[in-house]
Amino acid sequence: MKTKNKFSAGVLRLLASFILLATLLVLPKAQGAVGDIFTIGELRYTVLTEEPATQTGTVSVQAESTEISGDITIPTSVAKGEINYSVTLLADSAFRECSKLTSIVIPDSVKSMGSEAFSDCSSLTNVTIGNSVTSFLFDAHF
Image 1: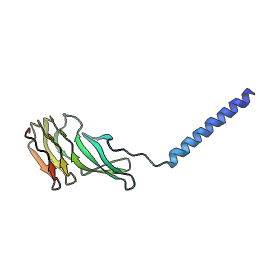
Image 2: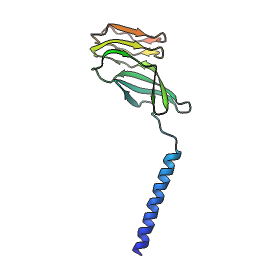
Image 3: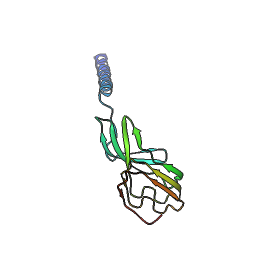
Image 4: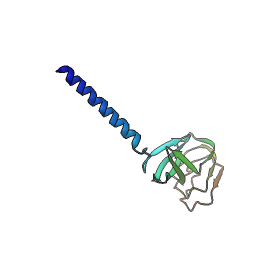
């Protein structure tokens, strides 16, 4: 009788494993959700919108740390998984206290720049802003 129970338990585990594997192969791949954060290089991105049907979305960008230095070019878009995100916003305090940052290029995809985006960036000498920025919460703490 014990042999029959062990056999039945083994078959049930095998069946459960098969069902789990089949489910993982059939379900669509999960992407990030609004509010998710991911990092690429020295920049951190926060998901603002996402459209899985079209595999597109938007993100905000900011420095991963205040140690970012030199010349930075913000990309027009970034990909995570199967979703291509357009970079549309510099977050509030995006580069605050990045005292080693010397220049930054902001692409046309960026529509808005948050407050204190460059506060206390003492080495920042050149900021190139794309033509699409329609909102910039200015601070005088360069």
